[in-house]
Length: 434
Image (cartoon, rainbow, N blue to C red; front, side):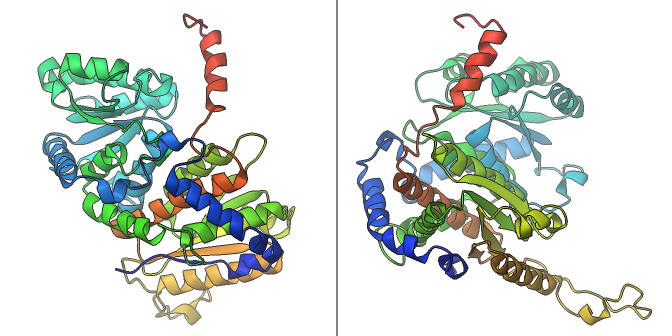
C-alpha cells in the first residue's frame, strides 16, 4: 500500500542550524517515548494500539454498528473533545460532501453529534429533528459527569425512552466509558446498556483508534479494519529513532522552527473534506503542548477558500508562522472543466483539465508565494482520502505529538489547564463542593 510522504525542504531553509542541533534531542525523545520513561508514561496505550487491537473487538464493534444501522435513521454521538473529534474527522472526510442534505436511507443512518457544546438552540433543534424519528445514542465519557455531554445525554435519553419505550431504548444506547468506575459505568450497568471500554492508559485526544472513534466510524458505514491497518503500518514505520522516521522528522522540524521564532503552526488543506482533521489536530497539539508557558499555537485554514480571507495575513503579516500542508495525491472522482463557446468567464484555457490539476497548481503557487514571503512550509502528501490513508495520518500525527512534546520539555499527556474554566463554572453555578 502507498504511504504518506513528508517533505520539509521548504521549511529547512529557515531553520537548518536549529534542525541540525536538535538531532540528539529528537533521538532521545523518541527513545523516551518508546521506553515509557518520560512524564505521562501511564498514558501510552495508544502507541501499539493499531497492531494490538484484537480482531474480536473489531468484530464486536462492527456487530454493534450493524445493529444500530439496522434500527436507526439517526445515531447521535455524545461526547466532547477527543470523545468526538476523531470520529467526526474521519466521518466527515469519508462522507459525500452533501450527505447532510439527503434523507437517511434504510440501514444507512446519519451520525450526528451532541455534547460538544452547551448551545441551548443547538440542543433544542437537534431534539426537534429527532422527534418521531428512529434514533440511537452512543454516549462517550470516562466519568459520565462532564457537563456538556452529561446535559446532552440526559435530554436525549429522556426523549428516546419516551419515543421508543424504556425497554427498547436500552438496545439503542451504547456507552463507551471506564471499565469499572464512574457515573456512566454505574448507569450502564443499572440500565443494561451495551458497553465498550475506554482504556485507562489512553487519553481522550489519542483515543480515535479505540472504540471511542471506531464505533461511530463503523456506524457511518466505514471500514475500521482498513483504518487500523493504515495506522498499524505507520506504527511500524515510526517505531525507532531514525533519520527516515517521518514522525520524528516532523517533530524535529517544527521544534527547530519554534526555536527560530516561529510560534504558530497553520495546518493547511486543499480539500474541504479534511476540515475536521484540522480540528482534531488542533486539539491533539494544543492540549498536548500548550503548558508551562510553552507551545506552538496550532491554527488551521481551508485553502483555497481562506486564501480570500486569511491569505493576506499569511502572506504579509508578522513572520512568526509556519505552514504544514496536507495534500491529497489522488481524488476519488475524475471531474473536468468544460469548454464554453462564448468563454465570457475567460477560463477556456482550463477546458479539459481535471479540477484537481487546477487545485494542485493553486497549491504549488501558494507555496511558492508564501515561502518567498518568509513562511516556512512543510508538506504531507496522503495517497487518497480513504480509511487506510487516514489511519496512517492519524498515527503519524499522534506519534509526532509525543516526540515533539518531549522535545519541548513538557508532559504531552496531561491537561491541567482544562480544569480551570470548569472550577469557575461550577462555582458560579453553585455546584455542591465548589
